[in-house]
Image (tube, rainbow, N blue to C red; front, side, top):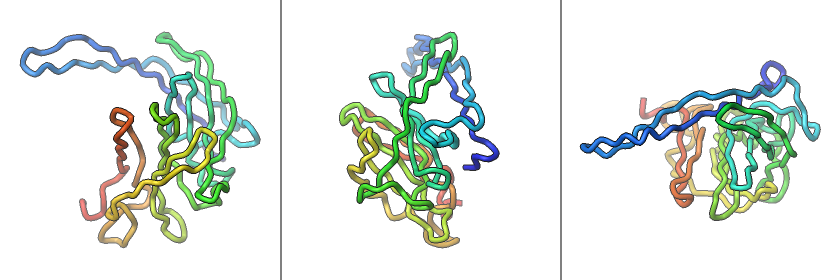
Length: 205
């Protein structure tokens, strides 16, 4: 993230329209995606003495609170997410209100130090009312392994997942590529957590 050159976010509202057209052969529902609007966060915008930039992932909770994570590696401010309200309709986005900043805490309850985390994705779980986030690791002087952790909505560490060993950094012949892992997270039925790498493993070509 380079706050000096690009500290804005395009918040895009997409309308998923169920066309209710099912083929009798395959019974698949046709989904159309329609672009509605975007909202640009002004360059240099700050809240709680942190510059809002490098916003990497966003998710919505049932109370209409949006959780927006920054991919700042604790370089400009400690790793963090923002609690945000977004007023919108199918006519467009009206306002985006950043309520407050919440700092991510490590296993010993401290803010992450510089280059000990590279935040990417954030997801809210409806059953546990907690947040799950990923760090893609790498890109540091000493390669840091990626991880997926759970935290409460105040940023406090709760637990960490065991990631298969193949999804780590090894050498130039196998393993993860720098800036290419754990880019996104998604829940299936709020019980199964899926992750996706930004790039294939080295051995996958």
